[in-house]
Length: 382
Ligand SMILES: NC(=O)c1ccc[n+]([C@@H]2O[C@H](COP(=O)([O-])OP(=O)(O)OC[C@H]3O[C@@H](n4cnc5c(N)ncnc54)[C@H](O)[C@@H]3O)[C@@H](O)[C@H]2O)c1
Ligand SMILES: [Fe+2]
Image (cartoon, rainbow, N blue to C red; front, top):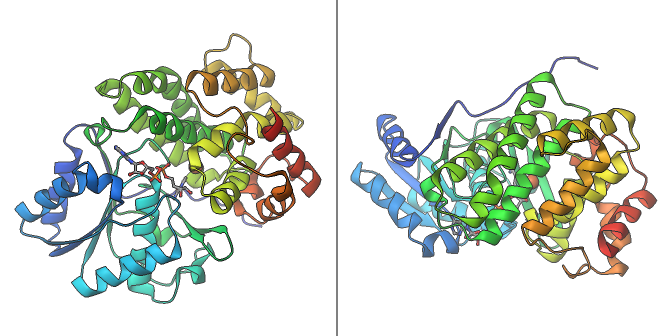
């Protein structure tokens, strides 16, 4: 097996108030002519899609819009967006939103140049040629999809989420402008922020962690500790929102290269099966999966290190798990999987599918199906 590790991030990333205008200037400077905006109904409703349209039209681009992306985007969303792109003859894709809009846009941009169906690209680096250029304007903090080489698309028939991990879907430009996040409601701020925390923790205990991803993960945790509660309380706080932009991007740098673990492997099934929000599933599962990971000596030590970055006085895995439960309470996350509507009779199929999910491969312990069922049960009954 090769001992070489790659490190992948977008070639250009803009941060801070004004980043959106900077990105529009970039698109003009590169002489693109026809942009398709890929977004969702919520973003269209709050006027963000119209704002970006205006910025692009002022720079003489022709703009078409696909704004029907669903949370946990589906193969149908990809097909419909691709149809709009082809009709328009777009030469650049601009995604606006959280993980759902970016993932849909990545899939559309990949199929525009590679052809076929998105299911053909499930797995690692299956595409042949680069996707259409993608400028990803982030509005949640977040999945980090605006900067990763992952796209997660739901297969509605099979009720599973497909993970496409492909260097060719890495956006050309990642945009994190806090002004696009001031309107993100507290519940979504909490859920997406805890998704970023999950990325940091899973990447830090991943078997593929490296010194670079470790730095990113721990700095991400520091910023989340400093700013997530503040962004939740006061969405207009520029510092808290900007910190969370950096935190979720650092978390993305960590997991884009060290991958994830069983929190995501199970959360993907809950999203595919019951259409539950990704960040909420992660937040509920995170302390329970880590309480099983504690049995691995190396992971145990690392979980203790994270505890101190979350303000705990003692560097123990137990202290971290208590802190994660406290975080969930402070941010009004659901207490367990039962209140989320998960059904006991589905535990078996959920565990079976979770074990097929590529995210589990880098978990510090390779669980058997019975252990995965035990984790789900613990998170259900807690
Ligand atoms: N590709 C990756 O690297 C990656 C990583 C983690 C998760 N994901 C995927 O991302 C998806 C979840 O993304 P998400 O958690 O960002 O949520 P989302 O994109 O599904 O958005 C959730 C809701 O928030 C609204 N919203 C977003 N930004 C807003 C804003 N600024 N103001 C008001 N409303 C706003 C949207 O309109 C939508 O209704 C899941 O499908 C998950 O599997 C992808
Ligand atoms: Fe995630």
